[in-house]
Image 1 (cartoon, rainbow, N blue to C red):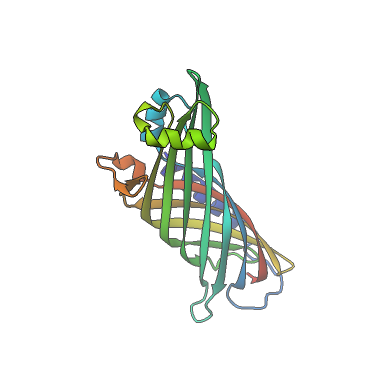
Image 2: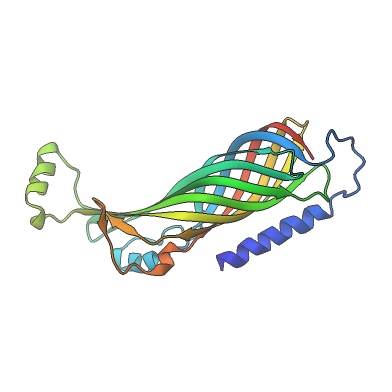
Length: 247
């Protein structure tokens, strides 16, 4: 489903701007797109962790990221002049979503944290002037962390150590799972420059995850993790860049 959303968004973006003043007569400074800059990226992230959400029903919290969640970070790029339209850069961002609920006198909490970064390689389509429409890939790595907690009371220093010494009698617990993976992310971006020094970006990215090696707490291996937990996630992006831009 997330793949379909990505391709629908990408196709809509391309259709909108391919019809945008293709034969524009505005004066340009370069025969091919040129620019260098960097800035802030905000993203609405749609995770793919259904096997986890299936288990949360019994744990007692709402599903994580059911409607998506906010991520943020930064990105930058520069066009390499000897290959018209080709630009390289870097990007990195992340975010978290938390759900909690009081159930049977216990506060129950689940938290998802996800981040990735890498090198971006993009090609700006030459058939549109004044706006940079680019397609490409991000190659890099990422991490997803899942945390689960159940607790009843606030802690004093002595209570904390008493519980650690006699962990079999405690009613409170916490677990932390993490997974590192390689990322390949197809992306489509639109950069709309203003006065050539500022550009607004709209885009979509689908980060495909390669790696399902989950670790528990102090790096203990977790076996038989459903492969669906390693699936990628969709990002819908917006940002503002500063530099010099000529399309």
